[in-house]
Image (cartoon, rainbow, N blue to C red; front, side, top):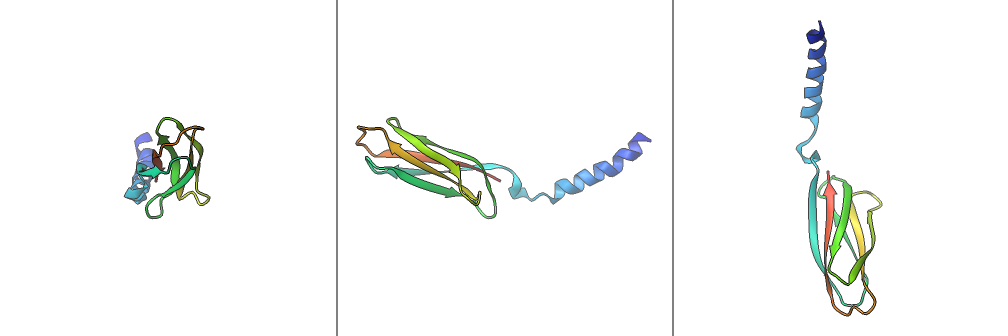
Length: 101
């Protein structure tokens, strides 16, 4: 009796799984930027197609910091602003990461 009740539920679960597009699997994207010396810089990285950003962040070189890190207003990507610490006169490499699905 229990087996008979599980079969329709299993069939429904398989159909729902098959209906999920392959692009729905979360995946990370990144881009590297070279920011000018002594100035703040803002960068936005968008997810491909109709995907949305689920998380994001950045990696900056020493003597710099991430001033802001947030999803875009439409949740299609991630925006960061980086700034140099006082006294830093060198340019910097910034890597922006986004988890899309």
